Amino acid sequence: MAKSALSLSIPLLFLLLLSLNSEGPLKHADAKGNSTWCVAKPSSSDAELTANINFSCDQLKDCKVIQEGGPCFLPNTLMHHASVVMNLYYKQMGQNSWNCDFISSALITFTDPKGPLKHANAKGNRSWCVAKPSSSDAELTANINFSCDQLKDCKLIQEGGQCFLPNTLIHHASVVMNLYYKQMGQNSWNCDFISSALITLTDPSNDCCTYA
Image: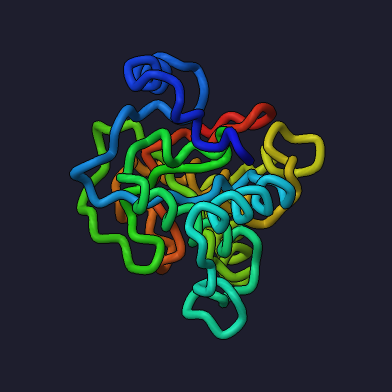
């Protein structure tokens, strides 16, 4: 994971131009001065999440927070643990967008992953709605059922659909939650899902699945 979050040896100007002009998912040059957090992409593989945990913990020197008995151990999932330490690394390094890249497996969000949605409106911004990394299987299933009931069509996340892979609840939930959010007018209250969702500034799309 030595090259995670873009190599810091590259000149700062190049990093800024890359983040602004790249076709990749992370397009925000700097999030300093904003209340932002860094979390793992819902489509991240177990291998990516494990690598992000290992890199972040190596840099932080202390990851007791996600170890058994720590305040952020539960839920005991790779998605949650990775997001916790990735965000700690992001904050410690100065909250620059290149500190929340992790080889394109991370998102910058302006919703606190630990708290309720407090932003009144995200209209006019490039924003997406995804499930919180700490969401339970029950919450994710409920969000899929609700969104699909409203959308009337969820073939996108069914087997053979463009966004079926990775076949995980958090990815499927995020895809249809975002579709609902967009269809309803991109108001922040359409991305609450009983406080189990985040509004992100980074496009969650992956190689196979384009989020609306």
